[in-house]
Amino acid sequence: MSVFFIILGLVLLVVGGEFLVRSSVAISLKLNLSRMVIGLTVVSFATSAPELLVSLQAALEGFSDISLGNVIGSNIANIGLVLGITAMISPLIIDREFYRFNWPIMMLFSLALFYFLSSENVLSRIEGVVLVIAILLYLFLLIRRARRKPELQPDEVDPDLQVASTFKTILWLAIGGAALYFGSELLVSGAVDLASALGISERVISVTMIAVGTSVPELAASVIAAVKQEKAISLGNLIGSNIFNIASVLGITAIIQPIAVKSEAILTNDIFWMIGIAFILIPLAFVPKAYALNRWKGFLLFAAYAVFVSLAFIE
Image 1 (cartoon, rainbow, N blue to C red):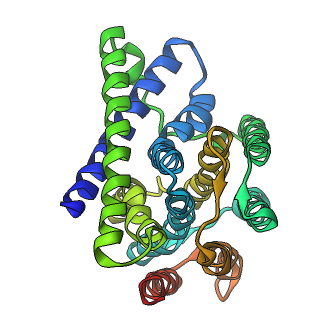
Image 2 (cartoon, rainbow, N blue to C red; image 1 turned 60 degrees about the vertical axis):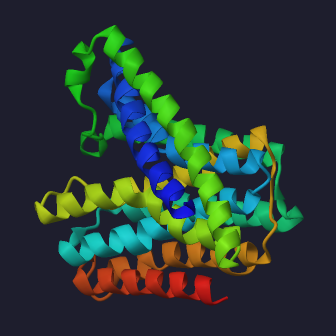
Image 3 (cartoon, one colour; image 1 turned 135 degrees about the horizontal axis):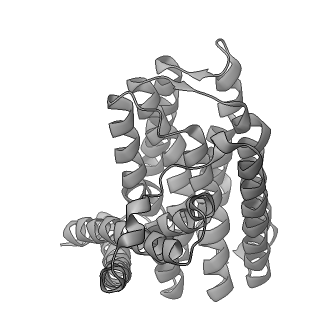
């Protein structure tokens, strides 16, 4: 039954996230916000909603390892699993924005999270506020850079949503909110029950099963784009997702409910995997062939993720 709850919870999160994105974009277009601003802010926040609801629900119920494991595991999965598989299907070209702006910001947020958690073994409300302010500053810089360079502007905003009726928009919002709420409830309770039944920690379930589940939308979109030989999925999208996971998901959760580190392995193992797999992108970007993530580099990332998951269950 626990596995059924987890699967149903993940399905509801995917459905809820999709409806929330559609309703958020439709409302933003009705408010005459530019497509660039919507793509860089509204869509980014809406796509982080499943992770936010899961982490918040887990923190409120006292399962802080799930809150942290969900985000840390998702960040590892975004690079090792999603990027690795995508590069194996179709090599990706790396633009200069990656190492000049996106990657340094991701590393900065990752190291800040490590510092906050290791200093007092808790992500406090004040640190949550710092993360939220930092993500707002990041968005400001992102919008300013996009205005200067048109090629950086996102293209995932569907202008047809502007003509969606008010009733339809409100219905999408209601469906999205309800699906996210019940999906997070089912996922957290199912994960806790499964961990108890298998005799493993909530942390292991969260950094593996839950993390992969909340990364399914990115994985599906990336694989489809790679198979179609489309370059719609960029390295920047996945890096941006990792930044939002840390700053908005954990930041907002910590403001509402401080997140305590209960499992030592999060600080002695998981977070180092998150930092390490993010760091390795720089040498992979330049050696031996610069500005490209080819198939063997993708395989290396995927193999690293497989090792991480294997070790999580062995420990």
